Length: 277
Image (cartoon, rainbow, N blue to C red):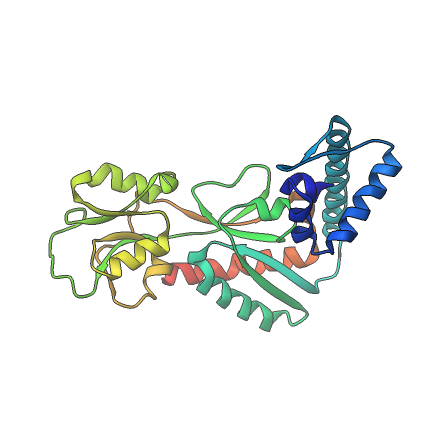
């Protein structure tokens, strides 16, 4: 039902569920027979839910949400510090997070970490991940969060650039509207006129790549840029660009033993690593 409603066709549901077309057709016919009502109108344009279909889909969605909530609650009561922890991270944090997981695995051999690159928190709500490491100016709402460390941000340029003008002069790589919430984007808006923005990008990896290519200076997290090839740091970390790294999980999982062990380890490990960047 949900797959047909989401895709708008039986063929789309077959692809989502990875089942045989005839099996999906028989499954829908059986559901309609038990419900005693037609749940979808068939047409050349696809499958459109009837009023009865809308009711069934809403009930199915509630049942799925309840099942996911129960699963999180049970996982949160797990007193065993063993098994798998799925960690979602932004793309810029991949190298640091991999080192964290390597050291964590040495300290806790019974625990294993998977890394999932995603820049949104929806994976926590949908149970695609257990923990998120996120950089932001404040804790996210509706989730359990612990501040791990401050994230220094500085100005960088291509190593071969000979422009000796001080920060914030020179040409810069800017950010588009999708990154306007970043403190670094606000600093650029306040300090650098549009005439000196050589390029705008929608991700920090793209800003780093543009800076490496010599298109302009860039404001980048030190943990990310210091390890990149072909860059030089132009400034000390900027006090005006304030960002913190947060350890985030769903409230139902905050008492999970394995999540607690990782949270405590990360709280000791991250400040030293990010301060040294």
